[in-house]
Structures are given as structure tokens and as C-alpha cells.
Image: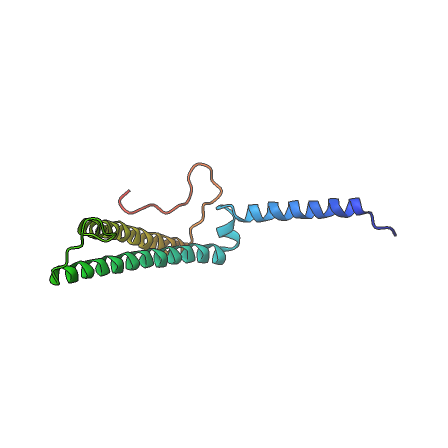
Length: 147
């Protein structure tokens, strides 16, 4: 029996195509929660948890940076220092940096809130056993309260 290289390549390509089709099929929202609910919901929850962790880290880093700038500014004022306008760190730049971090703090706090909501939605979907279903007209998605 002779091994034909062309047939082997065609067989390999067919196998890769079939595997790609299967993997794509398993990612459909109608299929994935139905056939592998544990992995589907775990993925949603992990994504929500990771988002929350990263948003909290960004918030903490920015908050601590703002505190350090504010402390430095208060120390300079307590010592009566007033750097000249040509310095890299002068009064105007320091005040702008403090205002900028305060603005970032409020934006990052919103991001933390959104990440908490995303995690809560993922946990709710897991608890309800949500699946998109096969209907084209009405998905069986849970409705938000009050909508």
C-alpha cells in the first residue's frame, strides 16, 4: 500500500476545515450554553470578574497617584516653596495634574460600577440557565426589571 501525499494533504485540510466548523458551531449562542453550559457560564463569570479586577486596579492606581500629588503639593505649600514657572514641576502643572486625577477618579469609579453590573448580569444569566434558544422571533433572554 502506497501513501499518496496529495490524499494526505487533502485529508488534513478536510480535518482542519471540519474542526474549524465544529469550533465555530460551538461558539454560537444558541449552541454553546445548551451543550456546554458549565464552560459557557464560567467564561461569562470569569470575564466579569477579570473586568472588575482590572477596573479596580486602574481606580486604585489613579487614586493613589492623585493622593501622592496632593501630598506633594501640600508639603511644598507648608515649606513655602513655589517653584519657578520654567521648572518641570511648577504650581500650575501640579494643580492641573491634581484636577486631572480627580476627573479620572470619577470616570474610573463609573468603570468599576459598570464592571460590577457586568459581573452581576453574568451571575444572573448563570443562575437562570440562560440560552438564546433557536427561535428567530423571540430569544429567551431574561428581561431587565422595569423594562
